[in-house]
Image (tube, rainbow over all chains, first blue to last red; front, side, top):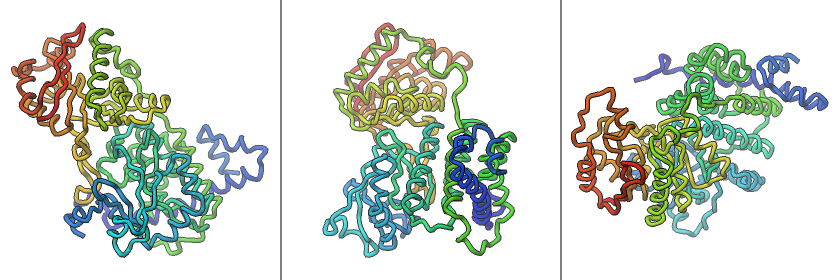
Length: 58
Length: 467
């Protein structure tokens, strides 16, 4: 008996694609932090969700 | 290989999935075979300095390589490259038995390993919570064969598993209800992300980490399920990988849980006995532990582990079980401060202990099959089992006789205010629940070595040995 309504579907593809997307965004953040070491701490500290969004919009 | 063959060959069923190697036991000693297929990865782990670095940081279990001419090596199959002997883990525990901070420590250990591995050209191919164990008090990776050679451009193959095994349950525990860690007992490969996404409060969508790694992740799984993704490489550079791991780490660090309510921090303030009684109990437990000298002791109903510490100070490894997540959490936090290495707090409902789960019910062991302990401590617990849970005394005696060789048990009689509380809202259907009834039932299974009235209390402490 399957407890999932879609027993033949593999969640792997979605996990793979979303990871690429998220990592691409976060990779940008890493690049920004590396380039501007002066403001590193400012970018590195992410106490609120808003700050995350700010970082990603850069 | 059939189930019987597994057992006959000594190969342990917990590691059957891994093509890199497997665990087997011979004469009670645990070995890990490294398959030929894993030769290159194993060499990289050992030669790159990664192994040494991780072992030094106490993130990975140390092992020794066996001489190829040894009996264990020769017994290994033709697929063997090497046989290694990892340090023995005193007690195997599972994520559904961990408190919030224990699971969080395990998650951070996993990410910390991944970061160090990336620097030396390797990456974790598994991020299973079952690969982490508490070794001398610290969350440690026990699967030496979890590494693969990192190829820049490839995504983290264990990303989904990490989200299911760690991030989803931690977010649920921190932001919804701490008891949701019990989902791990049902879902052996971690909490399905669509389930986590549905259960988490809407406000978690404002948290970037939870929005992406859980909510959007679950959405993407649904949207792309059944679709084949063509090229699975060359699309995620090192910087992106580091950004991903850093963000998972930051997201997890921000998740916290501090128990609410009156229980926190004052377990022993709500007991009904005096300091003198408490001290006397401690003395008795200390004396009897020194006398029995157990290698492994289980404290059942340990609260925040006061008596567990008394036993561990006598040189035993003590597993300190309690049903209350707040008590286990407090015990674990206290332990980190003390840097105590021979105590493990775990969550356990004695009235429904951890079952054997997984494929053929062989992957994760039940509570009982991880015993018996040399000494079982059952202090202020019998009334909960006999009265709240209606277990007849002879069956309790049976249970304790199977659980350990020696037993230190406290009898709490019916006139005790704590028992009166339990009986206040129900009919007293326990005519045999008396000191005499208790002793008669337990003498069937145990030799009673000591029976001492606890000072300034009506309680009796017993030292018993199984017949």
